[in-house]
Length: 332
Length: 269
Image 1 (cartoon, rainbow over the protein chains, first blue to last red):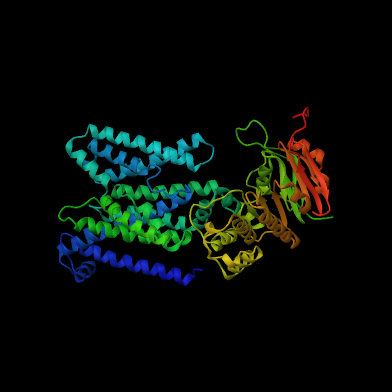
Image 2 (image 1 turned 45 degrees about the vertical axis):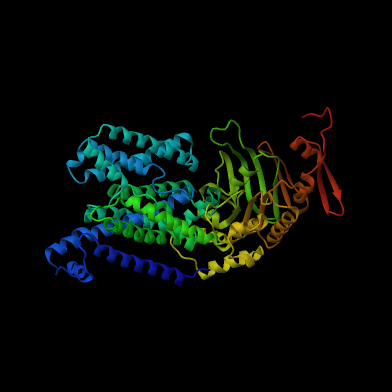
């Protein structure tokens, strides 16, 4: 049986790892920086160029990577319990397709030139619109929120949005086409402190509420009658969890584009290492997701410098083999 | 006069969109002592009735009271602290240990934030011991046999630490020995003072081991009371629409329900 002290040790270890990877990620890039440079920049004693790089560019980017990783991992873990489906991930109910539609529409119509906030705003709105549409479709098909109907609704709404994206791209000029495709591959370039705040607020508030619902998620993963018999107001809790998981995914997508595999693989990795209790799974997944995306983004910036790789490509290329190793380890 | 656990007054329930009531005008008292068996053919409304008993469904008409209070007004977690439930055919999508499964029985007492206390762990241990599952407490739940899994689910219901436990077909899919062992376990729980209600298709075992029987047919309660008086050949043949004999057996220590192999020609369907 797992003791509280052991659980605390795990979180301390992961937090320490996150700290170390965070500092490493701030150091690497087009301009290599020493730990001394970073400390000086944070304390305000560095030259203005270093200060701009560290405080204005690198730290917000690394922080955004960490927050998006945590948000996607929590969102994926929540969907997996709600839909009772191990293949569920943050984008399964059309969040990414809706966000892509919003972002691509804004790009193709040239609205993105008006303000840097247009694309995140359109992507966020598109993601939420897709989720609302999915819920509406699922509720028309059945009186209560049924997970199978929801999955189907997610698939059809996603397919519809994807078709609309392709339609827009057909009529897009070369430049819009290129930036739209890059957005869809995911990137944390251009991260600012405002972006950080945009993800931090839903992540912290939604994360705390979801942690409070961790036991309900454990029960929902077993089955709805069981959950109801053990005191969960099932329909209310499902709506709340869907809403929170969707907002977390939408916030991440809005600022970073579509970054796949984090939300699918990280919860499973934590589950394989430490079991399926959501009281431990949610914080563990948040920390591991943050570490993973910080590393992936650092690699995306440096591996093929000066060309920056799409981060979604890296998360899949690195995440999938890692996951296979974990799966094999469990079978031994 | 024995204590009454549940009181149903003219209770009907119709699933939304259905053309007829799944439970139709049922009035009965369920004794607080011993084992109550809920019997009847497939589709007779047994599972719906137990869902009404634990407030998972609200009656379309009528009132269900538990220990003198109308169930509709109870919050879900308050019911869960009073009545343990073992549903039919549940399956977790994620791997869990036996102990984790039983610890879920403590959730209604913990609320969203509180961590498990020593007392919670003690009650989980007791529940595991009560069903003889303590030796495999740290094994993955999915590696257990069907009978062991069912015992663990009962332990979870016991960990809820209520005064009653309701089981929907707990012996479905179990072999003879496991079925008898489970019934013996439930009898033991009843003799410790818990109210036990179960849905079952094993009429012979119910006749010998239950203290009270409710026989459902097409949503209606057609007979209730001592199993020996409820389970007669005539009543069962009518309800199951199949010729059934009830044979008194000295060796078995009670009545045996024996369906015939063929329907006599010319009998009404």
